[in-house]
Length: 208
Image (cartoon, rainbow, N blue to C red; front, side, top):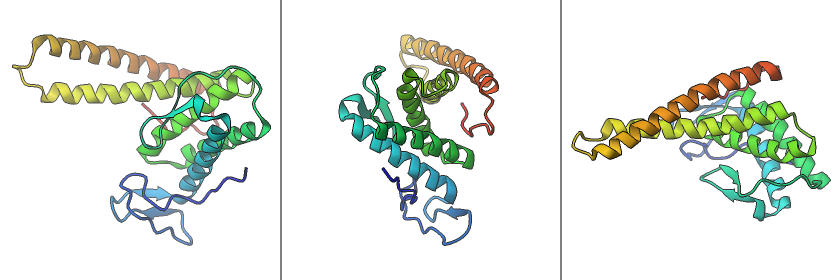
């Protein structure tokens, strides 16, 4: 499949219409003021198109959507051979995401990109087509981002809860908050170790 690297016509953050320049490296959204890398958006568009093509080829039984531009597998695929066009699409998605991460993406695309990358690695690694260390890295990163989101949500709930609220509920929230804090701290250390072991030429601009 020839993937399309034309960036989206709408801002990934506020959905305002974008006017892409004929030249230049960046565009500023008129709606939210976000500065977007033209090359980063093209790389992400190319990666997303390749990923969606692979998803379609594999069949919808393996996949389910989880929010806008977020993707999670229903069940881990086994090690059966993949069709050549699926392998090509997955490899194009991998290369495009690496390029996009290096060029910089807004948070919503970073999240979607990490989830796509983790799924690409889950498909390629059992077939000997991806590094086990890098596979572990992206899976841990996706898990860490989910834990970070839950931690932030819990912080907001605790900050806005009233003292008169149920004591047992507050205790449970604080316990879960502590668990997530410990998990996130441990994951950050593990990701740093994996980054050193992998030896990224350019560290992905994704962090917990």
